[in-house]
Amino acid sequence: MSKETKNIILNTENLSVGYKTKKKDIVVASNINFELEQGQLIGLVGANGIGKSTLLRTLIKVQPSLTGSIFLNKKNLKETSTIDLAKQLSIVLTEQLTSKNLSVIDLVALGRHPYTNWIGNLTEEDRQKVDEAISLVNISELKDKRCYELSDGQLQKVMISRALAQDTDIIVLDEPTTHLDMYHKAYILKLLQKLTKETGKTILFSSHEIDLAIQLCDTMIVMTNDNIICDQPCNLIEKGVFNSLFPKDMIAFDTKTGSFKITK
Amino acid sequence: MLILVLVISFFVNISFGSVNIPFRSIFSSLFGRIENSTWEVIITDFRLPKAITAILVGSGLGISGLLMQTLFRNPLAGPFVLGISSGASLGVALVILGSGLFGGAFAASLTTKWSIVIAASLGSFLVLLAVLAVSSKVRDTMAILIIGLMFGSITAAVVSVLSYFSSAEQLQQYIFWGFGSLSNLSWNELLIFLGIYLIGLLLSILSIKGLNSLLLGDNYAKSLGLNLKQNRLIIIIATSLIAGTITAFAGPIAFIGLAIPHLTRQIFTTSNHKILLPAVCLFGAIVMLVCDSIAQIPGSDYTLPINAITALVGAPVVIWLLLRQRKMIF
Image (cartoon, rainbow over all chains, first blue to last red; front, side, top):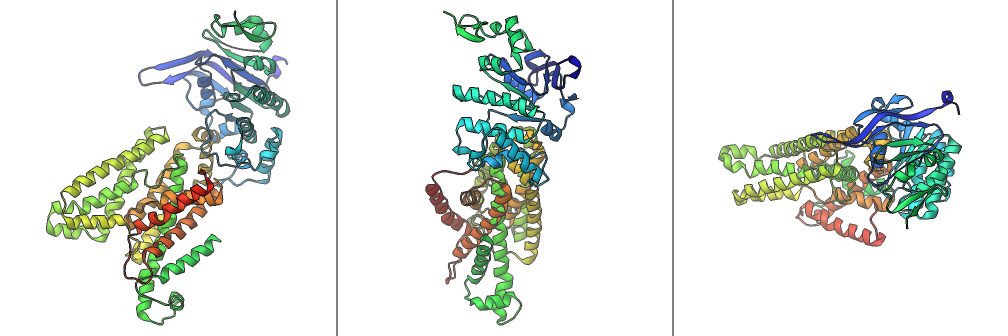
């Protein structure tokens, strides 16, 4: 794709993220610059405590940025109203649902809230979008189940379906593969890849499954102590970025297989 | 179905009382045909206002309980967690127990019914203002819950200090207020009650959509375009209007606000507030009417304190339901 036709959904300029306290700002990560294109699957990887969640929370406007700016569809995130944001960006978090008594169909339908009237009545169009979202992730048979009856993997699919029903340009997922077994980890990430292809949505997720992400992602954002790099996975391997991800005394990145090996 | 039950319990409630009035005469006096003027007075001036009060109190407490449980994501929350009842108790305690400190004649004029109502409203309103002021600073909903409980402890302490210095007579009056009472409301008072109740109800209906998205959690609700702060404010104001007036007019009626939303969730097995809100309304009204009918002890002259009956009747029902379903639906 040539530079001119690139459709940037989300980009950051000299962003630094962290926490504000009364005395001073605690910077978790700084000098963050990346562009996310339409229809891409982007994996965000990095060691524990490097600031992946802080970055994601800043991108979805749960916490304010310290310096620099975030642009969503070329508009500064700070100037985007909550309701406009809800129509452009949806999220899947690691936090527990408050009520596990919701039925799957009701939960997915909650994704339509930014579009419904004051009391939340669904129109014909809303119902269609909900049905679409449900069939996209293949959970039709779960429709009438309640959330407490679902396994972790099923619940994750339902939450993804809810984000789809919100019909946004970009979906941000915070560690969607935690608590899942190896099969379901691959399944969820593969599903995300399929969704970017079928719906043209941009999907950004953070994960510790680096080898899976290398195989599936169009772009990866790698957070290390020194810097934050955003590029295609093969370029990142060539540059040897993954080697600087962790201390080298335990595991090392094997360029041939594209995965980590324990050093003997 | 529930509406039918409500209508039946309404008439049953009216037919119970220390004076025995046949069922047919009740109908005729309700619909304007005079058979017996004493009965007529008893019904229109005592039993009818009481039944309406029961409906307002029951449904109002149910609604505020539902709002609080969803807002605070806590099945133990009730309409009084914000310190509303503690505030009201403090106001009433100051008027009844503190009146001794002001001396005789002044005290007599202070302890009329209206002064108690005003004191209770003022007390709950002031505590509410304090909670609101704090809640605009605190981002975490749980912190508000704890702050409400702390206000409760403070007022309880002040009340016990006051009661230590009060006469037995004053103490008895205060304790009687604490029993709760649905009777003694004139039509005028009922009108004020109804007005405030309707404002609260309207605010609750407006927040139905917000309540539903809060079921996902605060961050999800925000990502769905919900204005969290504004929504929280509306819910808190609605609750305090409803629960505050109820406490002012009928005393601190326990249990209903906590139990009714749970009973409703168990029966309707839904979390959608579009269904829960009206269901809680009807259910609360029915339970309150039934409790009040029991409190009358049909055929006797005694009227038991309503506060005791609600818990005596309600608690076993909740326990039974939980045992039967084996889990709490929230």
